Image (tube, rainbow, N blue to C red; front, side, top):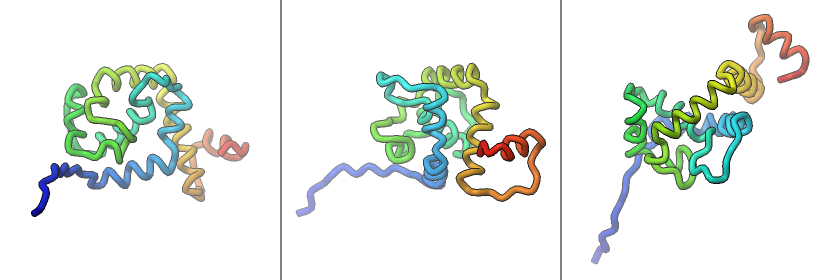
Length: 141
């Protein structure tokens, strides 16, 4: 006799590769370090940014309030973090994180992530914009 168990199927698709790259580069930690964390939060700022990136690469164009629907059939605990459910990725939380990112400076955060990525993959460059070359020559990356 076979016991019937409830089986829940969740997808990862190409998002597993993207989540792995985000983890490898350390983007989540960089965002958390830059924006700060609060132990009362279920989802950190870095996890929200990771979810935004995954959603953006899911080729879905929907209003922000429908953001949790994108993750309903996805393995959110595997992709984003243990204990993270789609309903935790709501428009209120995303909006607050976007405000923090704006206040911190999106360009500076992007530059910090870009530098970390170049360093991680050990990219040998021949030409970058003037400011980047000066920054690299000072041993900052």
